[in-house]
Image 1 (tube, rainbow, N blue to C red):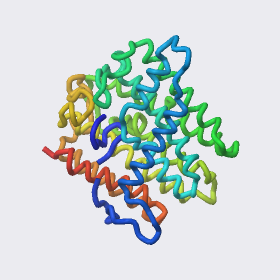
Image 2: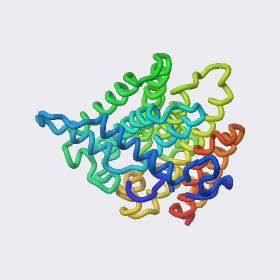
Image 3: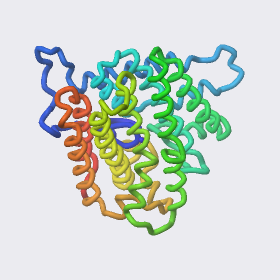
Length: 332
C-alpha cells in the first residue's frame, strides 16, 4: 500500500492541490477534510472489528492473526476512496463502511502474502512484526486465504440489490486476479535483478497496486450506480482518476523506500535496493520520480474536474497525497 502520515501502502499525507484546502464547515455543514477522513477510517475500523469477531473456542490463533493483520494500523486509504466515490451516488454511509471493510480485508490479505519469505520477505509492517514473524509462516498463509474469503462473504451478505452485490464481488475479484494484484506480484518477482524498461515497471505497478485502488473507487459508485451507457462518462472519469492515483501511490512507495527511515516507513527501508528490484525511483532517479508523482496527481485532479463539487472528497484525498509528496518524498 505503516506508522504516521505516510502515503505508501495505504496512507497519504495533506496540501492544497486544486485550491480546495481545509476550510471550515460552511452552511452545508460539510466536514473538514481531516475530520471526515478520520471519521470514515474510524467507522471502517469499527466495521472490521465487528465483521472479524474473535472466536470463542480459542483452539487456533487464526482469527487473532486475522485481526492483527487487519486492525493494527493503516490510514485506510482504499476504504476512504470507496467512501469518497460513494458520495457521488449518495450511497448510505453504513453500506459504504461495510464495503470499505471488505476492501481493507483484501488489502490486508495482499500485504500478509507479500511479506512472506517466499515473496518480499519483510519482517515489519506498519511498525509491527509481520504476521509470519509473529504467528508463523503457515498461519500467515491461512490468514491471507481467510481474509480473502471473508472479504467476498462480506460483499455477498451486503444489504443491497443482487445486481449491485454481483458487480461488487466481480470488481474485487478482478482486482486481485492474474490481471490484477496477483499478476502484478508475479511480474515483480520475475524482475528481480534484471534491467528493464520503465514501461514494464509501470505496467507492473498498475496491476500490483493500481488494480485494487481502481476497484476501491469503482466499488464506492457501484454500490448504487450501475455501470451502463447512461453512466459511462462517470466511470470513465473515475477510472482516469484511479489510474493516476494508484500509480502515484506506488511510485511514492518506491521513493520513500529509498529515502525514509524505519520509523517513517513503518517497514524495513532500502528493501528494494537490497533485493535488486528495479523501481521507478531507481530507473528515473528521485527528482524525476517525484515530479512524475506530482504530474500524476494533477492529472487525477483534472480527471474528476467535470464531476464538480460532488467529487470534492476524491479531490481532498489528492490534496493529502500532494502534501505528503512535498513533505516526505525528497527530490535528492
